[in-house]
Amino acid sequence: MNDEIQTIIKNAIFNLIDNTTSKEKFDLISKKHINKIHFIPIKYRILGGLLQSLNIQFGNYIEVLFKLLTENEKHLKLYDDISGFKNILLKYSNETDNVIDNYITACQNPENKDNLLDRFEDLINTIIINEKNNQASTMIESKHDIDLIFKDLRTDIIYYIEIKYNDDHDTGKFIDINRKFIKTYAGIINKFGIYDKTKLKPILYYFNNKIMKGNIYLPESYYILRGNGLFKSLFTITYEEIDYELKRISNDDEILKLFDDLYNKIRYDIWII
Image (cartoon, rainbow, N blue to C red; front, side, top):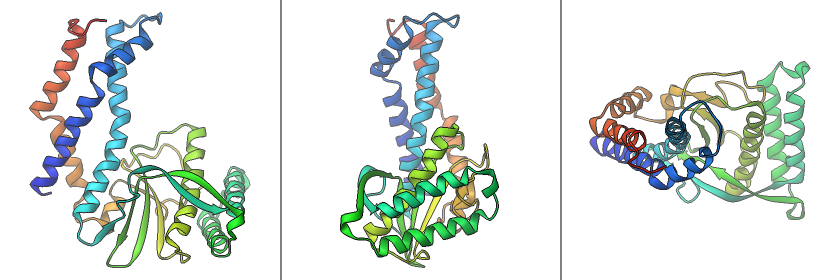
């Protein structure tokens, strides 16, 4: 990993900590806890709330990190007009919308647990046929968040990547993640006018390798990648380098001082409750 990327990663971490542990965030979390009856002292509840907020924001940081890594790769072309943006307006047909909803529902039937790869490939084929033959009057417009999308110039394949830090979502959100992922893919098909599934690859990516539960909607290793799985064929920087750099930064004296200062502000009433 070159020095420039190391510096950018470190500075981004500093900004993340600074924004998430600001006095404004402190006041906001204080208001949530000040009137709650609890045996844990309020100072520690506030500290825990700030750290939890920081942990959540780290997921957003991973998205920024991957945009940076993509820009650093000469063989990858980042679509920076939509990558990392929220509320991108996408279109797909009513038929596709219904097919995806029916697919998600059918996957929840234990009798349909086999041949997931074949069933998902059939879904993709149906979506492509629907979108290729769609009529403007039947199109649905909806807003979608696009974490990362780029083209591998070596193969001309476009990759749409939905990035999650950890596989730890509750059941309701887990279903919603998979539904939105597939519908976003359908919208991207139309946005790019690509009706060849070999030229547009959707991937649900988890930065950590942990598997909380098996995915009954998407085939593992084909459309779900974890940890090093995304790096092997697409990035020259390795997952191990990223892991090492983040661990190194976590023990950096400046980073440790930021957390020590935060603790002291709360512990010793430097920020008045």
